[in-house]
Length: 259
Image 1 (cartoon, rainbow, N blue to C red):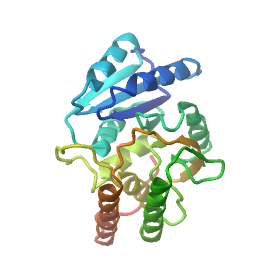
Image 2: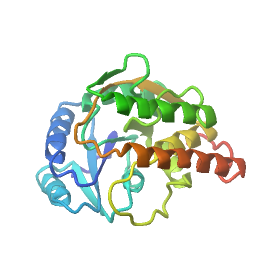
Image 3: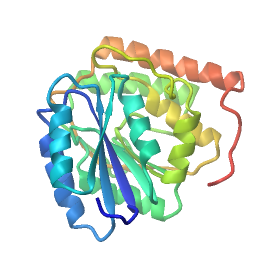
Image 4: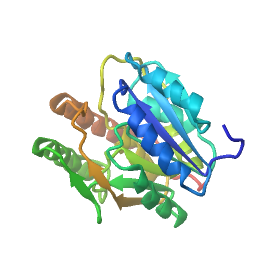
């Protein structure tokens, strides 16, 4: 690894991604080698029971700016949190391991951060966004959840769940350390689990007074998606009301000074 602190660290949470991770890292490394700034890719293995961890470590051996953290299986939120809190430098982002948003779209988020945003979120609904290959039932599922969280927690945010977000590093550290529903006390789990951790993250960003920009991106539906429509929607709805309850009882506090 180079000694220079990165301008950007990209965290890639990975659970049983042996089939997709090598191609994702190939694309990401190729892209970043063509950029003028220092960078890191941090793969956080979420206790995979396939060859994900071994493949990630192989990449770290051949590429100095790819690092690997091995977690036990506590879910995507905990994996992202682990990688974000380990990040240094100016900016940190996270991207799904299926690279459903092409890594080149990071340029849109970095431009927002350079322009003064504290948090820049990729959006499949914002101006300039395009969705490719999404089944109708998945879109309907997203719209139902979208209506709920906008009504209860995040008015004006059209897409909280896109797995492509970037932050000023100090801001990201502050947010992830103050999350409650998906904080540092996550317990080991079994199987995949889609949650509302993005919603908590953005709710907390607004509550703590950070500037949040929503940026339209290109998004491609992954045929190997791990989303289970009924069970995951139920969990995400429950998360919304947990967040609302924590806010109502003052557990999130109030605004924080800008880092």
